[in-house]
Image (cartoon, rainbow, N blue to C red; front, side, top):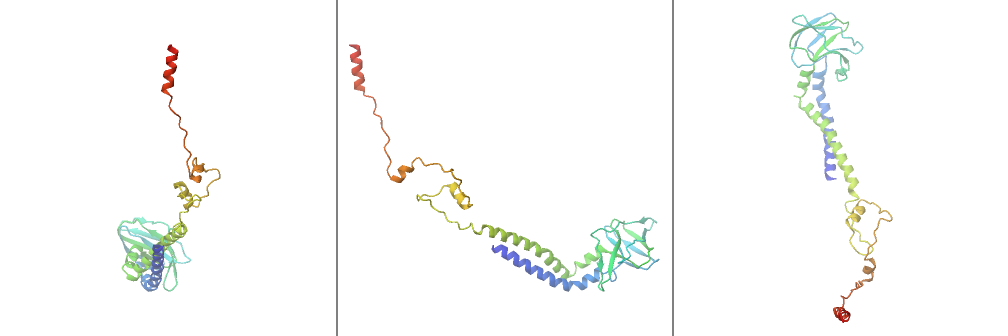
Length: 244
């Protein structure tokens, strides 16, 4: 129970630290994740721009909420178009510092490294952002790191502490169970101790009568009948008579 209390207290403390750190990390989070503040390209309708793509990167094209059509082209230096892929559930809508919502319309995860040209063929503004670089920049912010540790580690310790507490409550009533002597004043057997510890009632008719119960209660043991050996003298007399 001591460890359960310690882990629960540590969990609450880490969650409080995570919440406090979140409010201190918000300015840096908006600075790196708000497409209006941090982007590689911002293209008006009909515009195009050059962008440098790195290997193993993750790049997202976004538009304002309400216009979720891609209407863009990403062309490499050889004239080959990279169509990217449709957004998944992991590509969430992003909220800017002013409350504006930005919706992912196209994601580029496996593009080859090199120079590309991005064309905005839609009717609204297009933002092109580098997610990997933005996330890496966040982990250099101390408040963000403290927030991640508190919010991720706190619930884990809380669950472990709750499990230990439930285990402790379940075994509390069985820790100090005394050994009870039977009516005859003898120590119980191993099977009887097991049933007593686990609160198992003995089934009727399962007792085997003790063959020495009567003698134990009276305190005296009856002697066992002893048979005398055969009389050798009488046997020799019989043989003498038979032989004349």
